[in-house]
Amino acid sequence: KAGVTQTPRYLIKTRGQQVTLSCSPISGHRSVSWYQQTPGQGLQFLFEYFSETQRNKGNFPGRFSGRQFSNSRSEMNVSTLELGDSALYLCASSSLGDTGELFFGEGSRLTVL
Amino acid sequence: AQKITQTQPGMFVQEKEAVTLDCTYDTSDPSYGLFWYKQPSSGEMIFLIYQGSYDQQNATEGRYSLNFQKARKSANLVISASQLGDSAMYFCAMRGLNSGYALNFGKGTSLLVTP
Image: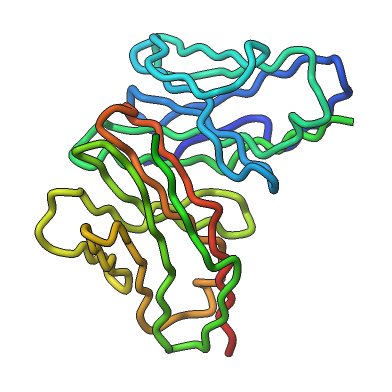
């Protein structure tokens, strides 16, 4: 069973640009969530999607957006990039079983210059 | 609001010894779940163990066990018989009744296992 796949793994952008990150969840998982990890702030919840609907949203500005497609694949977009957006962006999927444990991908490491 | 506190930024343990990683939490949710994840240098978060707030027994998964003390609001991870491959960052996380499936993470503990 394939795990959570995130693309691209690494990318470099400059301030003001936008970026789109992609996440393919484990087959059968309908919940996809996104987290930002930085040395200063640690792991912070961005948003969660289930059946193409955003159910939860963290405390991030509107420059951060996402969507989920009918096949459960998800994308997140960051517009007007700032230096502080440099981070590891982790996607996780869940089967919403008993524990609802999240299975994470290896992340997309974004560097903003 | 929920808060997860991991007070040990870094820990050392010798191979084959046991080690305890501390985690305390604060929440007003009547029902919640506690998780531990391992993050090696590759970046992927690996699920280790889960404890529900109403579970009567402490969770165990192979060499991992969770020492859950509800009254003290602590959920310490115990790794027995440490291996070199256990060297990684370890994160404690919580999900509350009112937070959907969003996890609230602690700052993490860096564990180094020495030969």
